[in-house]
Length: 194
Image 1: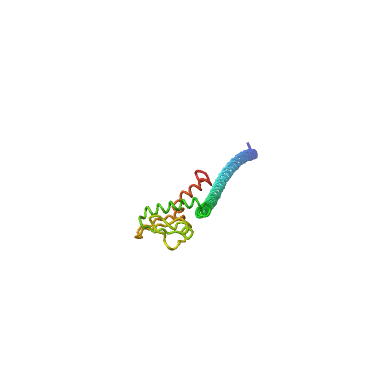
Image 2: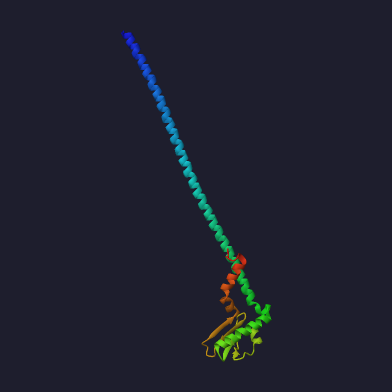
């Protein structure tokens, strides 16, 4: 084998080696590109999932905020409606002397009798101007000379001033306002008030 043949053999081997290295390089490049593409897809999927989780959390937080605001608005509206209904019931109760004179006369008589029984003999009955005309004489007690400014009912004071029985329409309504509110709440919004 001559020098020329050796040179040709080396060139062929070098060319074959270069082709083999080129093929291995192309295969390695393809593998690296596939791995990079898989990593990119994985990263994109994780980013998409993270973004969706953030969006879901934000949406849920906003919905919760809107629901809470809505519940507060409903509660405020119900409370305002209930307060108005209680105030209307109060106004109607205080107008009892004009709207139902006979029923009011019986109520006033009962208030005075119960007050005098509690305050004792010689009690002083305080009435408003309208009721002073109706109840000029009260057995076992005397009617105070000056009229009071309440809507109706009576204040009955013991002779020594130590006992005061409050039986004005305002006092009666106030004592029962919790029951009135509960009744109106149940009537307006159902048994649970919701």
